[in-house]
Image (cartoon, rainbow, N blue to C red; front, side, top):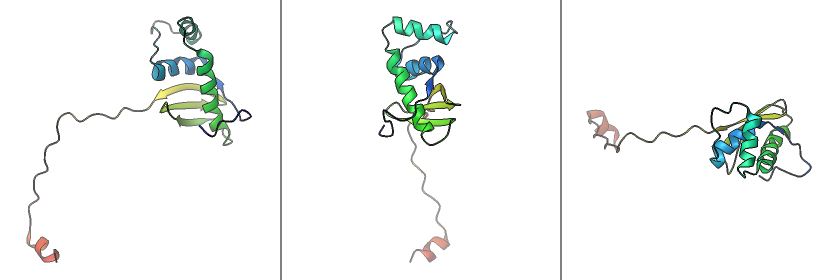
Length: 124
């Protein structure tokens, strides 16, 4: 992101946002039985996930929103294509974009439209 500078504003990255970023972008899952986000982040760190880098990225993206003068809002960041939600200067969660549904089957050809007298009159 070209909007991120070393001197720009940075948002606070919550443990929940870090956990969701790891799950939704990195594919690192934590057992759903672990409901405490702080414990989940510790488990990710013990597994070798760079949680400091995750926090820095989240804080930078939240800072992009804050640089516009707002303390709350959403921002979709690339290359992740994830939605970062900022509330009162804190990135509280990271959401996956809505998946586009694939068609149920192959497309069927469109049947030809019935022609009428008006079509031939206005064709020329």
